[in-house]
Length: 274
Image (cartoon, rainbow, N blue to C red; front, side):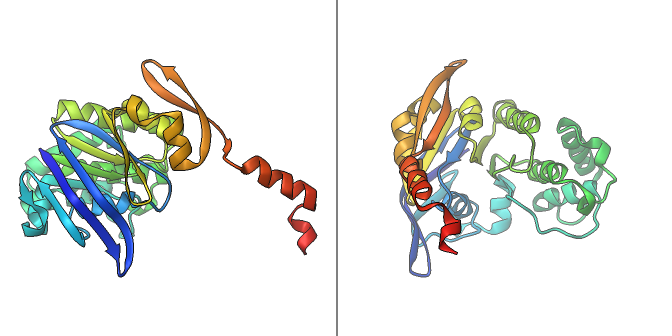
């Protein structure tokens, strides 16, 4: 499996979001995309799975231009787990996950499809939720079911938009660890957007750091997660320590924040302006 992006750009109307994106991801690996809010992380993966059409450059999947592929054919290769789902129908968890099989079987699931679904639910430790209505689940359970639906597509490439955003620390580690194992055990290229740099650094084979709509740094966690990169991209001072051979970020206050706090104290705070 391979994703090759050449000089890609994307704009909403006349507002540029991404520019000069050059990327070549080849083979099974676990990749994390990090960066501040609004730098184009979600837009980037939407250009990969043809939800959005780049306004310049090309996106190639397995040496085929995505622009020339049908959405159904893209869905057979590329799975997608959104940040949130607007699904409100009272479908059971099994039926919700079965929707991930539609690119392969249409709307007539077989016994094989059901076996695939139940195996995925068991792997994610949510098989006990199989008959529960999807719209009655907790936020964390909801997120795991959406991950299961993405895996049910049996994709070569899996894109995830903050898959652990609604999970507690234990389940964040659990889900990210599962994704890491899937990349090697199922020979998948997995690309995850994450706001947790330390979890991304702990599990990723490669990290991509975005700034102002372009790739600021890309490489191993040790190459990307540096004090200088954190300062330049996030505007935060930090200390990087070694944690089992991986960089771990200890954050300081944002750059310039001490001066802002001092001004607030001198003015008596926001209440003085009332």
